[in-house]
Length: 120
Image 1: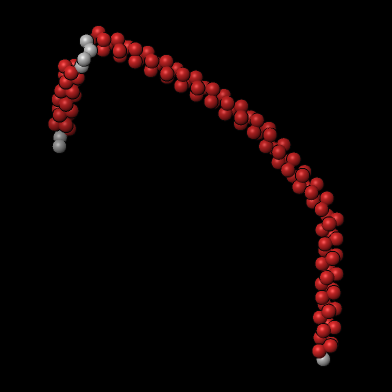
Image 2: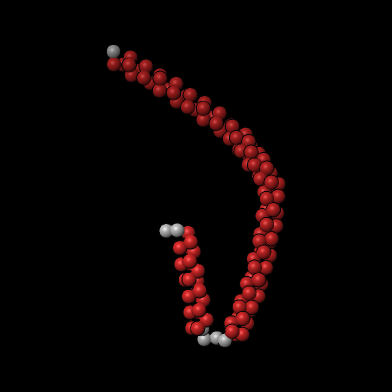
């Protein structure tokens, strides 16, 4: 299909659609113009609202980013401090458990030796 044929068909279809709309509309020309002006004003108002909301969103994101940059390092340092404090507080228990496990292993080794000697 050639581009000129396509454009001719598109033009004919557009003209036909425009004529059909003009003849089938229940409103007069002045009513349609008034309605279009009203819709246009309403759309401009809505567009301005969207622009305002986007500006608020941008400001909010900027503020949140600043807060995150300040708060995240503090939180990380707090968590590190808490972990270090927990490790220090559990160090005595860990040492006791290691001693007890060593004693249990030693007792098991002695028990195995005595069982082996009794079986001979």
